[in-house]
Picture (spheres, one colour):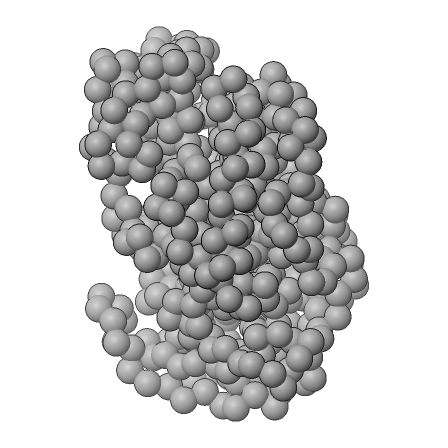
Amino acid sequence: MDKKQITRHASLAAASAVLLGLAVPLTASADTTEPLRWSAWRGSGLDPRQRCATVEVPMDYSDPDGRTIEIAVSRIPSEKPSARRGALLLIPGGPGGDSLSDPSGKGQKLPQKVRDAYDLIGFAPRGMAPSTAVDCKLDPADLGRTKFLPWPAPDGSVAENMATARRVTEACGRNGGELIRHISTANEARDLDRVRAALGEPKISAWGDSYGTYVGAVYGQLFPDRTDRTVLDSNNDPDPTRVTRGWLAAFETGVEDNFPEFATWASRPGNPYRLARTAAEVRSGFLRLAARLDREPLPWPGANPDRLDGNVLRQTMLTSLYDPDDYPVLARTILAARKGTVPPVPESPPESVIQNVAAITVGTMCNDIDWPDSAAAYQKDVHESRAKHPLTAGMPRGPMVCAALPYEPGEPPVRITDRGPSNVLLVQNERDVATPLSGALKLRQALGDRAVMVTVNSTGHGAFLDNGNACGDRTVSRFLATGKRPGSDLSCA
């Protein structure tokens, strides 16, 4: 399993698939930050040019002279100093992802002109090791694939979800320390401005992916005059009343947008993983199998949870729809379950990584927006969701762990607006399970004339140099290298 797959698995297992009112920077000028001291990267399998450093930032930006934490940063310099324009931040998805290895990884997929123009900058967000790390020390059972996300009971009850939320938030309160209360998108954006200053850049460019699109949008809202060229790839709805709640709910739409692609693939003649003769039969067969596994789960020793039940099948579906290359994972699981057997236990990152990701997810999702604490309200929403969207069985409307948070967020969310320079390019696949096109259009609307949007007729999460197409890749690459955007929103067929 490569790093991209591990990061995705960890983020999904811990919560993903990552805010509003008018926020202010809450910090004095970041340009007083000490310059970075680069040292050799003590890792394996990475580009030997990559170096690392740390940036010291306030843990609490309302108390800039108080306790500090460290942000780990990596860099591969511009490959042609005479063509260098500045630095390109690679902003990871999540919450719970990092981009420390990305200068050596996806950064090397960038066209030569882009690699010539920029130093490629990765980082581990606050709370993510090897930056100053946070850990809730959760019970391993609560890290399970269907425990952290609020998959309801077979009858739709959310009682166990609420119990999980209480256990998780109590553990984070005991073990997460003061830092977990200061993990948020706004603080990540403020940290990135300290990174910009430490790099000695008056302005900085960025490529934000998935949850990183929201980080990039918040950075551009808080520090508009410090942005150069910004690419936001696979975009979240910035609705200031819902934020992370809205992202969870978006899986309803995302699955309905993407399952037909899987069903068409799984009904194609000649496919060794063919499940049925027609796409409609694939869908109905999936729903019947999930219902059967709700009633009669199969033992799955070594997995977490240690059984293949209906929700594990649904979670496998959700994970597999992120990338068409992962369709066989879902098909193999369905074929095994039909026979009363289970597939091999999926690879998983070390528990320490999952614990770290889980804590960051709790911090971000709970601190960015205030979640309701009414079990009855969630129960009503889940029943409505189950009726309208049976594939996701009510999970996207369920009570995330934030439903039991014993405190309210420390500041209002950042409202994304059209105030600022016109230097943003959005790129978005039409069929994206985690960040559906409908949500991306909301971000496009919020940014107004600041942005142009490229919509790509492709399937999967991640468009630029990933699951998109040549037209989209060419358009984004040209913008990063030259600053030229389409004159208006563009569709890439």
